[in-house]
Image (cartoon, rainbow, N blue to C red; front, side, top):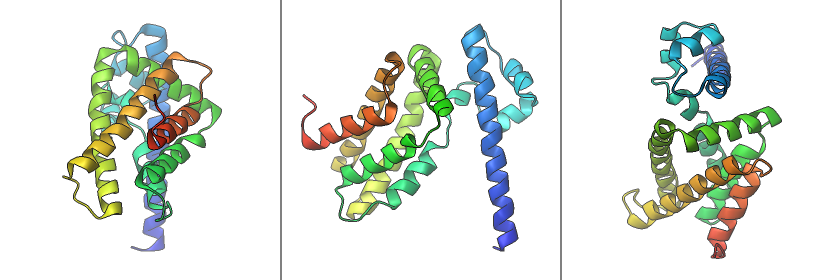
Length: 199
């Protein structure tokens, strides 16, 4: 692939991410003002100045506008960069925290509002669970590759399940406590899991 082709792909990806963020921002505002169930895809599209068909090119369903994000690619990239001598949990913890601690103030506010909606709207909670199951599978595959074992190994799956369980707990706590810092909560909980100090 030529440098020009790579540059064009990079520009397209940045434009896509920018459009997704804009649509999500308007969706969040409308959900806050009108309520999730009362807000239509057409209203979100109109607010973002796109067509409904363009909305569905970015988000397959209305729920996805609050569930989808660019977190998984950041997590994978950060995980691959972890030192090989770190324990699997330490590597995951570092990757998960680094992918969230560089968020801007506005992104952090949006993260909290998204978490609050996800935890209170049944449709979003169900969609989020499906998304987290996919993330759990991704973590399973990353860890299996790192330690040279099969992704079907029950211990690898249990490990990934524990990490996702921590993430869900932190999401809920973060949504309920406005002064909490997501990255700090996540780092602390995963550290305690590793050291056996959760209880």
